[in-house]
Image (cartoon, rainbow, N blue to C red; front, top):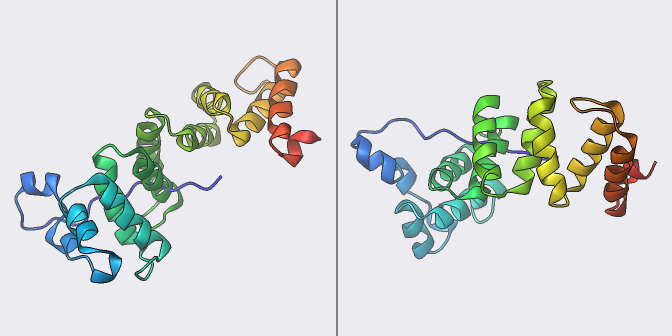
Length: 193
């Protein structure tokens, strides 16, 4: 699965700490006109989470402006800190993969958790992957289970493997078959085998 991570705030500025917490820095506030209409720019620089997320997407995807992952991370952070789950997910992916920021598994885990707790299914799955990769199946399995219960094919497939091998759970081939069958119904060719 494709994952992104959270992005730290930009370098300190000369503004007061209270102002820094509530709005982007002066550098961030200078959005290029090409990023979008004045209403979008104004809303983003005022700290509107949805507007900041849209600006981040435009920087990340190179829509209307040249792609700039570091700037995308800055704006994902603005939105993520306001509690916007899709921004938290994208920020987590950035930290996990080192997109626009240095890789940081702990920050990725923190932002995935924030988004997952709000119901972001991909974040649930990616938390399972992070925990499984660090061999912590006791934490991985519940996140895979939650994502699988929402119908996420990758988590269903992973639960099929986990139950077939008895990795972190009691081996149960019937449960394994159930998860493989559900994943196969959604087109997972490996699960059909």
